[in-house]
Image (spheres, one colour):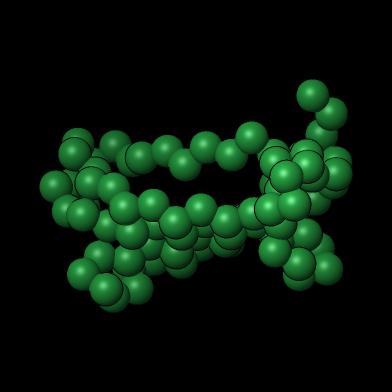
Length: 79
């Protein structure tokens, strides 16, 4: 939605269901082309995560209501 403040929460889990990283950002989508949440593959323990398969879970809310939830698999490989 253009010109609407939203809260985007991105969580990254390993295949055992352990939370590896999360980000919670408030943003406004000025031109309806999307916003970016960047991650440098550093886990919550301060170390780079292991190579492998992970699940990303994105929750977007506007006005305190859940608007969209999406999950995708990602592969993290060597730099």
